[in-house]
Image 1 (cartoon, rainbow, N blue to C red):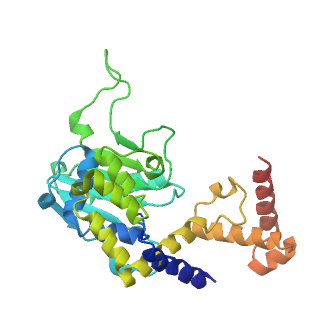
Image 2 (tube, one colour):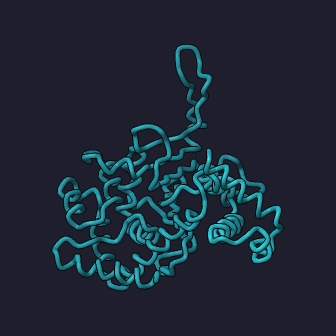
Image 3 (cartoon, rainbow, N blue to C red):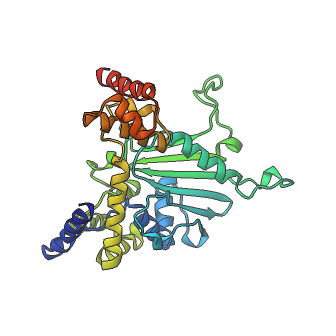
Length: 314
C-alpha cells in the first residue's frame, strides 16, 4: 500500500508539470538540503551570511566530508548535516524536520563534539576554534514571534547599570542559532534571512519565482539547483521517497499513544514495545494474551495500559 501511495504521489509531480506550475522537491528533505548546500559554496556562504549578519566568502569555506551524501537516497532516515570551516571558526548547519525528545540536549551535544573534535592530549587550549551551530527546524521551538533565535554565553547577573555582562572571549566560543520555518510562512519576505526562510518552505515554481523576483542573486544558484533536482527524474523520485520516509518517521509512534503518554519513552525500542501493547489491547486482546504474545510480564502490560488511560484523562 505504501508503494502504491508513493507512485500515486510521484505521478502528481508529472501531472503538475503539465499545468505550467511544477511541484518542486521539498528543500527541507535532508538529502535535497545537503545536495544543494554541500556542493554550492556560494549559496552556502549566502545562507550563513544571512544568519550571522556578516559577510562570508565562498572561497573561505571548506566543507568537511561527513559520511552520507546524496548517493544515500535509500529511504533510511539519518541525520544529515553540513560541517564547514571558515577561517578560525567551525560551523554545523543542520536541517531538522521533527522535534525529537531531547532535541535541545542533542543540539548541545553536537556543539560540544564539534568544539572538541580533533583536540588531542598535549594540544594547547588556544587551538580550540569558536563553534557555531545553525539549526533550521520545521517546528516551533520558542514562545515568541521572532523566527530567528541566537544563544550565546552571557553573565545573566550583569553588572551595575547593565542587564547582562558580555565577555567577548567567552561569547565568541559558543553560538547556536535556531531558524523556525513555520513562523516564516505568513511573512512577506524582505530581509535576506526572511527570503532564505521562505526558500525552505517553497513547493511550487510560482512561489520560487516570487522569491527570485525579490532578490535572485541572494540564492547564488540554489534556486536553479532546486529546479534541477526537481526536473531530474531519478533524483526527484528518490527525493520524494525520502520525504515519505521522513513523514513516516515523524508519525511512527503517533498511533496508539494518548497525548503526553509517549513523552516518558525516549528509547525507540521501548516506544515500539509500548505501541504494540496498546495496539493489541485496542484490538481486544486480554492482558495475559498480550503478555504471552510479546513475552512481557502481565503486570508490565497492565501498568502500561493503566498509564495510557491516565494520560488520556489528564
